[in-house]
Length: 444
Image (cartoon, rainbow, N blue to C red):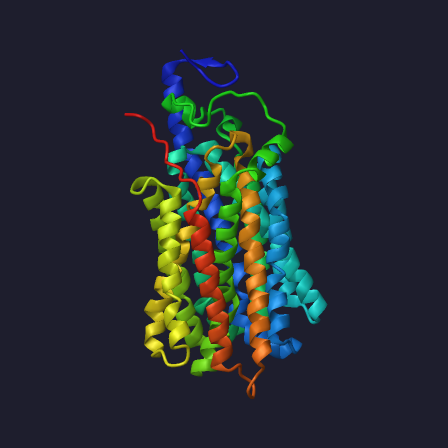
């Protein structure tokens, strides 16, 4: 006989059958979230492609466009702690299903808007809704998978997320050319409602919801410390805030993701169009190579953290150093890079910006099992505060130089890129001073 959590004893043959079903169904839950997360990233970076249309139709300056795009990130950041609490105490199934409907409404409203106030509100709802996807994913990983699978699967999530960013580049530009930017966002919102319903139908919070054993019971290893005394929520929060690693990882997250969203998420296409005179479709084709690189980088760096370096700190530190170096060409030769060079350059930039993936495992290790999603939410805040502020601040830098005709001068973009490089150096210094963590694996 084998005993499951809760004291239920079952025959070994039956246990083996349940274990097999559990190890299969966890991939169904994970796959549902992968599909959902594609559209989190799509909403995040789509304004880069329609930026010229938005500036023209609503009469926006670079600063006001930065504010509009960043309106996704402020509610996203604000929702990270509630998202963690919802994931830990309400469960991913209800959390994702409900809030993704809000995201769908916001996406459709973005396309229907005819005033700046309405489109700001639509962008705000996008941020609120999709904010409750990533942290529930972390809870699903903690409930259904082993700790030494965490970074690899986190990287895979971000790889699929970047599939959404790929769709929000050249394919979106092509769709906008066919039906216009408004219909593109409206029909995307309709499809997102279908995904929300599928989450309700398919996703399960934990193995016991289907009568399955946990990975700890299957492997005979107390991966998450076994049964421990329940620690009050605020005690866990205070402990997290006292950790040096938390604040150093927060600085790293703010800096690295701020540069990603500032460039990939908004200002890359205007830079290519205004400095190099490229048409929208060609600029979007170039931008597509960033998320392709990022998709591979997130997966590779997460896997390297789990399997090769067995260190969260080293993977993140080495990655941000290389990523910082990839900014040098656009700083040194901002207006004279051969256009064909941008294709491999953006691929390499995207690959190495995936260095932030191990941060989620880095902060999770040492946390109580019931607090893992909330702890990740408290780190995730800083990614999106960085994303919001960098989009707006880079817009301020551009407006500070002013337009020459209808274009910003190359020196304006150059200074915005210098800001990004300095920020990445600060992020690398912060990661250098974190305490390393090692991946725990099952003894064989």
